[in-house]
Length: 91
Image (cartoon, rainbow, N blue to C red; front, top):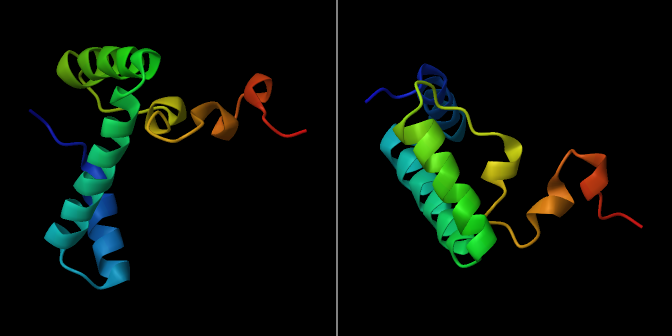
């Protein structure tokens, strides 16, 4: 298993900026991620998307790449935050 080098760098940078140990920031990031995954798992369509992403990218894939739509699955209305104009929720 490989941890993305960019992820390691971001954790180091954010811990330094926030003036906290890396393990504190890592624990918080894990906590936030688990809350979002739990929220996404409650909806069958989001759960399916998340499961496919986890298998294809994180289990079978060789690089860790999360597109914006996957990162927003745990939010109340993920499509409202998409950069895709067809998903724009503004009036």
